Length: 188
Image 1 (cartoon, rainbow, N blue to C red):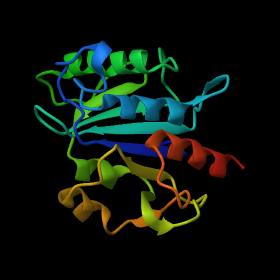
Image 2: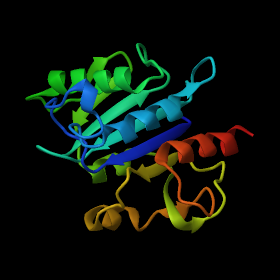
Image 3: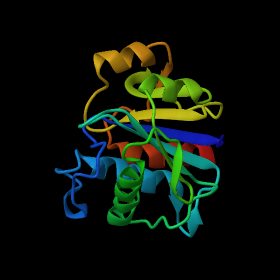
């Protein structure tokens, strides 16, 4: 398990490759938010953060849930642009079709059908990023759970309510910006 883990909930992110790479904002169910978060989580100025993993929870149509795991330690073919990251996800969805997984769809990209509860349950020391949480990010936190542009659903909150809650500041920020700030706090 990585030293730092980021879970991004994609409430509308499609679980089938029924979208075009030119339409990740609409046709893919706001997948743009998730791929920006992958870039913010794994990329640094001259390479990949090998101590970090990203877990995307695709919860949209046609059949939730699919987990996409980007392993910072094993990833290859990841570029710092939205389109190529979306292509890794799309190609993985094609390979996963009709299977449960886990399968490595590209080096360092593992996909499987998995409930949100099972995903959260297997990750170490999770904390929910929440505007009502504590102000400081603590070094002992290992897993950071963030949403897309939608708040967690009632069923998700039943899973997340027992977790500690933290925030990065007083202002509501984009998911990718929160990830950048978390790295800043933990890198110091």
